[in-house]
Length: 450
Image 1 (cartoon, rainbow, N blue to C red):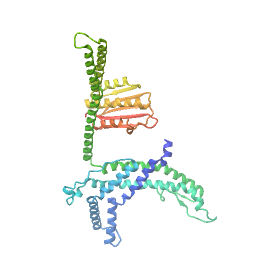
Image 2: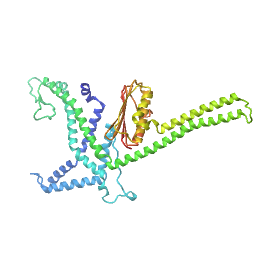
Image 3: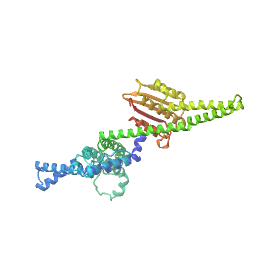
Image 4: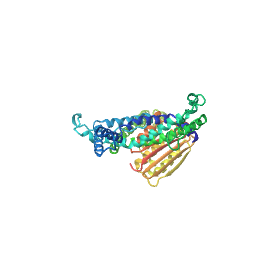
């Protein structure tokens, strides 16, 4: 923990978070509250004599002007542009990808009827985001102050000799030191000699160690607001997710049919054709009359046909297991126990399922466990594997952990991308935690009912 605290200011992630906070500060200028205050000051300056407080008329004019400006920003799409800018910053700097809201309906011919832009929910959500980020922006500014103040304080011992080398007897004002309370006020202090600069440097080091955690906390709040307000609406996102699930289901069914066709063509069909050919050749060797010209050859061909029939039967059984494993008829617990017994690596199996999921969910969980155990045996160099299947609320959670070398990556063709697609068909989720050196933990979350 101490190492993480010391290294936090120097990580690339922290630099990106700081850059994200600095890049978002200009949004404070277009904040509705700031625009209202500026409009009040401008109206007061134009209509008053600069004395006293703004009148109610000034406040009303400022409110109307701010409202018109916000409405114009929504109607013209300027608000959407601000939202896309924030989404782009979050994606490029923090790796947080938020979906783009659906476009504004323009009607026939691509032209919007007057006032249609004002009904843009995504634009008004951007305005809401700007209102909500006013305190967040001030906290981001405070976090930037921590970074800048800490660096300045830390440089005092180095700069003291360069700028405080005046002749003896010269009286100079003390140098203010940055603290979490600012430059002035209670809790602040000033430096008037060289030993005091080391106290300032200690304060600067403390501020630099605290700055990354303040920045991360503020960035986390901002990311939550971006996901909640700058992405597509809840209903639109749900429709998009359902469309993706439908497309994945169609693709998965097509892939299953292609795989069955290929397995039948390359396996059972060839064996059955060979069986027919061997039987035909055996009939030729048996002859057409009562005599048997080549009994040994006919017997050999019949034996080959018998072996081919057994192999074809095995292929057909394998195809049936790929469609629906018969072991699932007695439940997912027995199916997982069968996989654990057949695994090349010792498996520690724990199953806690209060009730049986639907057959579709059981099938997906079974194939996920089979694929993950196969991957562990092929790629992980693991000595033990732990498989846990538990039901929590309305979620079936399957977790497979191995003590292998780690580094599992769906992009390397280990079958994980296919599992993610199969899980997504039923609105499930696959999470991979596999740092280099291990261990690897892959969690599959499935709804209890499909």
